Structure formats: C-alpha cells, structure tokens
Amino acid sequence: MYGIVNKAIEGLVTTNFGEEKWETILEESGVDHDVFSGNEIYDDKITFDLAIAASKVLDMSLSDVLIAFGKYWVLITAKKHYGSLMDTGGQTLREFFTNLPNFHSRVMLLYPNIKPPEFDIEDISENELKLKYFSRREGLTDFVHGLILGLGEAFDITVETHLIQGRKDGLPYDEFLVKW
Ligand code: HEM
Image 1: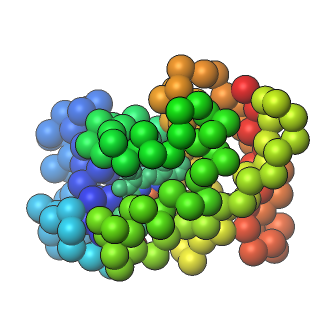
Image 2: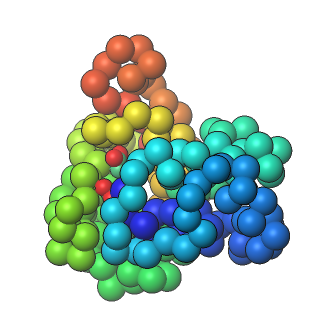
C-alpha cells in the first residue's frame, strides 16, 4: 500500500500515545523502515505488521486498533489533509455513502497505482443502508467498521453499524448494516 497508510498509523500512535510508543512499535514490528514516504508503495505486510505490533505494545485488541485507525483515517488523514477531496464525496452522510462507490476513482488521480476498495450501497430506509465492501486484501474488515463510525463523526452524527455477514462466512465481501 502507499506509504500514506503507514504514515497514518504513525500519526494515530504519536498523537494519542507519544513518540516513544511509536519507536517501540516500530522495533516490535521488525519493519525495516523508520520513515515512510506517502507516495511510495510498500509491501502490505508492513502495514499489517505495524498494526499487530501496535496491538501488542498498546495492549489493545487488533480489532480495536483497526477500528481506531479507520476513524483516524477519515477524521484526520482524509478530512484534515484532503478536505477538498472529501467535500466532493457529499454534503450529507447519506450523500457520502451514496457516492462512496466512486470515491476512490478520484483518489486515483493522486495515487494512480492504488488497489482501491470497492463498495456497493443498498438503501433500506431514510436512515439505514447496507454497505458491501469488496477488497483484494484480507484482514481490513474492522478498519472499515472504524471508517463507517468515522464518517458519522465527520458529519456529527452518531452511527451504529455491525457486520451482517462476510468473508468469515465464505462470501467474497463483507456486508455491514449502517443506521443513524
Ligand atoms: C481523501 C481521502 C482518501 C484518500 C486520499 C484515500 C487513499 C487511499 C489509499 C492511498 C489507500 C491504500 C491502497 C493502496 O495503496 O493500494 C486507501 C485504501 C483504502 N481506503 Fe481510502 N482514501 C480516502 C478516503 C477513504 C474513505 C472516505 C473511505 C471509506 C469510508 C476509504 C476506504 C478505504 C479502504 C477500505 C481501503 C483499503 C483498501 C483495500 O481494501 O484493499 N478511503 N485509500
């Protein structure tokens, strides 16, 4: 994945737990880099090793690390650093979800070699939808859980979400119910 992802993990840790914890996590991960360049592509294993090391060092479950990372990705990486791109996603939470399937086609103008996620949205009612997440990667289900919660926070709305069914059931996608 592009280094921006690893830089975001670093940002999440240093902002909430301090530089020293990040140094410990880097050491624990065995990752052979101490600086990441946002525009360079790194092996996916590095990202997963960093998340696993963070869970050990911070004494959090991997699932909680990925949820926190998803929220950070939306609220800090995306909203703070790519505010105008995020604005193209929609003016309301509902609009943002409706436009989400096309979002990474705009991200690809900045990161052309990205392997983007795919989303499919099915409306259920005014405040409820189903979100399907397709990925070429495994292990990011909880990250998406955090992204959904982060989008709620970005629009100042309390969102509830849970996985209805997914890859753990042998499907080629994860399906979340999202309510607000
Ligand atoms: C301006 C904001 C955003 C930028 C610049 C951005 C950029 C990226 C980049 C560079 C990656 C790494 C993939 C790779 O290198 O192959 C990625 C992955 C991902 N992004 Fe975004 N993204 C943004 C917003 C969002 C939002 C709002 C969501 C969903 C709510 C999202 C969901 C994901 C997911 C799920 C992945 C993991 C990819 C996979 O499943 O393989 N991103 N994004």
